[in-house]
Image 1 (cartoon, rainbow, N blue to C red):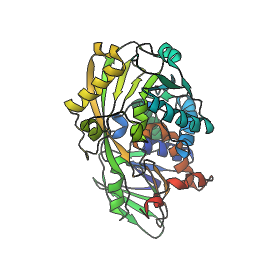
Image 2: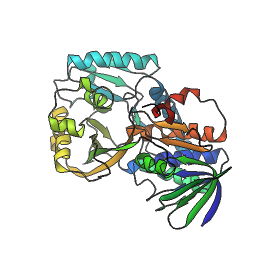
Image 3: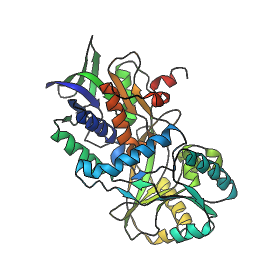
Image 4: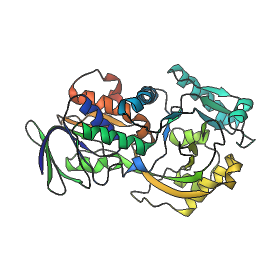
Length: 390
């Protein structure tokens, strides 16, 4: 099958679907080439967090706050329930060392406009009555939210199809040709898309797409394992993380003393309740290639620390475990924008664990860049060229 489209998006996860949606809204014709089923990568094997408190002060936090405001409008805009909830979030603090560093982190976040503060044990135990009593403080932000990635992707897909989007499942891209004034992307099953622009939104597999063009895209899979509980009533007012979770993303120096195994699997702690009542408990950050299996030892450590932080969870059953691949970069920031020396070639990938949180704003920005509208100097620091001298 041969098609002519304005844009070919490579990747049918939440990032590719969001980018396609905003391109369609801008009047572009779009085809998506997806190597598996829609949303079969990280987007269906992740938690549900739109977590602002984990973002570094700077462009990451700014984009996350803008993305959250877009999320507030998306249920009405898409005409669908996407499981969007704003319950707030707390980062629990175990000792004075963590407290000092989190106070500085929060101060910087406040300077960028985030509604967040350090609270004492009284407020912590009021909002989290079942948290371990040795905790000394917590952060609190009323802004932290969540969304169901599966419902979100279904709504984006449904709206996209209604706007004329073509989606080719089980169609891995095998060849990309750059011609004088356009591109041709060829996938399995004799699918060929002739287009003016290509957007690489293939998550942890984006490096493989770059190889087809001789482009080094330094994105690697970072495996994360998650345990999912039975449906239970809320045990606290907000979703919850530890300062060690923030450290595992940004500053390992504030991690508590850990075993060699915990270091090997990058053990952190995140604790969120889905709208259906299941708790999603994570997580690991493993350099394990594309091995998507869960393993008993890692899950056991996740649950052991869960009982340490929330002893009441010892009474709760685990119904399944999942693993997915965060698309990670060398510096922990996503790669967004035009790829130098390749007119019409763009990328939206490498968001690591923030893909769901940042998908609306990233999709909107990339769509604007493809259309040649808007001013996007602020995201120049996220361009692929930043790795050219490394």
